[in-house]
Image (cartoon, rainbow over all chains, first blue to last red; front, side):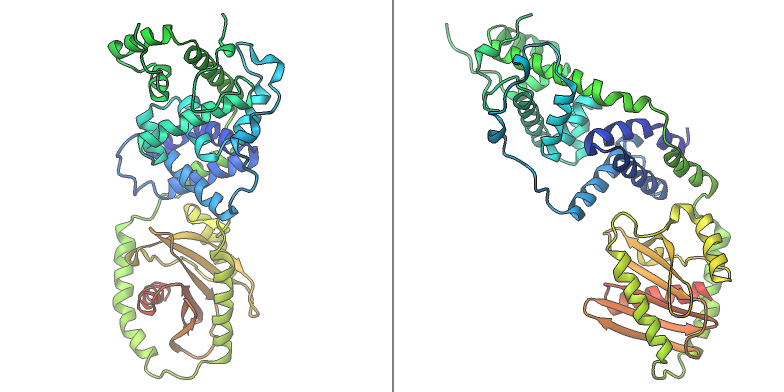
Length: 175
Length: 255
């Protein structure tokens, strides 16, 4: 498999991650295209240290970071505490979550937390792989994952608990 | 009965990942049995994973858009220049042109008005496009075959962007920019740290065989010259000496 074949084989996964991260089809595919252009141009500089796919994700995340920096600080982030009083949807006791609700909640996560959660939960990366791709220490990854999951629970009405603690008996799931 | 401390987020994340070694997993399983809130949290996490997969996994099953596949096709069609002949040609050019630079530089004269205008246009193009994150160039270097054909056609002469790898700058790509004297070629280069240098080329003389000139506008420096039917400017936020080296390389390769 040539380098170009390996890059091409990674496109579906890059698109999946980019769409979930960027949340806009055209902009997500723009991001993937930027990533591919860079990878193709730099493919001879790649030293073969690790899987091609991880290298591609790293290029894409760097590019995404540059774009965010160029766009300026996000002005719409709301503190989690301010969201906790939102009415829980339909009691929140179902085994599955309403997809639209989860999609909306993902959009309210800080982008670093969203990037971390998607790398593990959607892409199935191990903690070590995800930390390496995101270029953060493993401890930072773990805390972003925990905060992202706690915030999602609140935003999907599963708990009104503070993200730090676990105790809230009434939300116990009954099989 | 002694109270064990509640399971930490890290414990639960590791458990949820399913990658714990058996002994660690069974230790956590014991504590989980007495911790309904942790059980509830794990159930919600599993529901989150299922929702994320349902929302986003299908994107990977869609056909890949043509414009993304085209990036690979173009790269296959135009492998990057690693041709030894190319390097020999570049070396010869350096040898031949060394003498020419001395000849041209023999009478440094006042800047011709057209050349001053070229310098200003080059700086304007530089400042306009260097700030672009998404679209700094119209045709990327990865598509060099198309870039060269297109530029050559519009400039009415063979156009090959010079290689500044010796100075640590790689070609990003190029575009055509308007100028009072007709279309000009505009190439952008970037080094490993993201610093950008641009090369502006007008395919006509603007002043007779003018030697290298230097202009400075705050942090942005320009080296420009006109010779043999080409008027060029190299613009960048680089020290004068570093920019001069790039201009030398451009001069050598463009002749």
